[in-house]
Length: 81
Image (cartoon, rainbow, N blue to C red; front, top):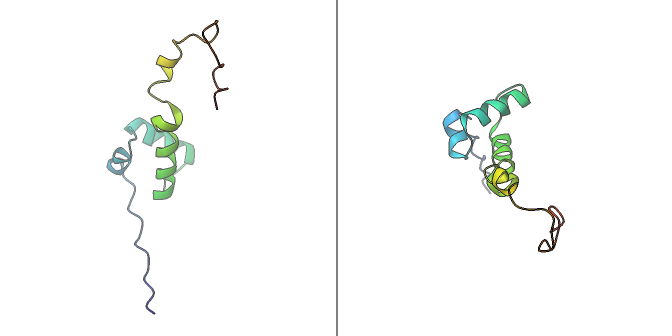
């Protein structure tokens, strides 16, 4: 049986970060948090955790406009899960 070596991770660049949905500012913030350039796995983790799906980074300011109390509110914010 021949064993294959897994391919090397790509070099993390601002362009790759952008393809992962991160802005230049977010990429710089990642580097500041880590104190170094992120590796490919770390870039993937940050891009997922900072995505709209996980963090509501784009809709949070709009969601704050909705009421949080009143007779039509069935569940308080954060209690729906």
